Length: 212
Image 1 (cartoon, rainbow, N blue to C red):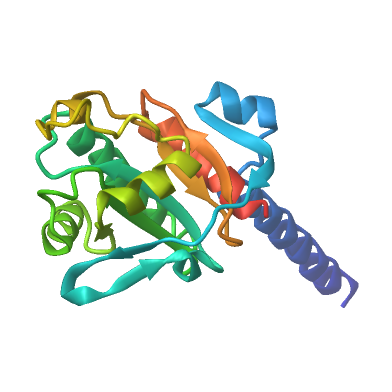
Image 2: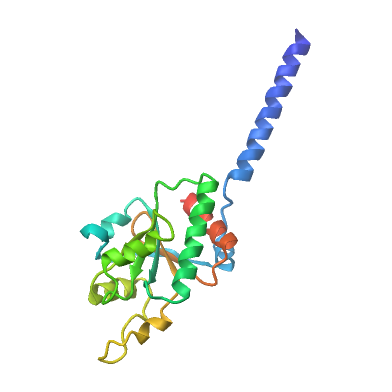
């Protein structure tokens, strides 16, 4: 009887050790602020408040500040006619989402938003279709240039203003290629800076969104 009891206790002990080991392997490591920076994420010590905004997606759906509540948001500023940087960055974000799904990382409180910096040519339907071409969960939004400038300036995406009076779209060639991180309180929390590498992007994203 004693031998059987000892075997059961040993089996239980091994099970607990293996469970803790597996949990350690599957739980994202929480990085320090310096480690995050080294891996491409500049995180503000104090997240910045932003004012309300209003954009439109397909079918007239409104996307405003309330849509940021209770969700971690990755926001990227680009446009449908972008030749290289936008599709490259959007592809990296789509790879991030794929990796997170494969790891069964919680995504119910995560969202991915593409804001058009070419509202004169990108309709809400156009930008949303473009965004969903990378992943069906992505949201594409657009609005007038004054609203764009209002939000872009708050999020340090400042070089989206046409030069001079002529709308020749040349200003789009040098747009800021950062990925903006907004926390579940709708605050500007940080910036992912290029070049984007999926291993680093995945590491930093999981660390910050699983530690708060």
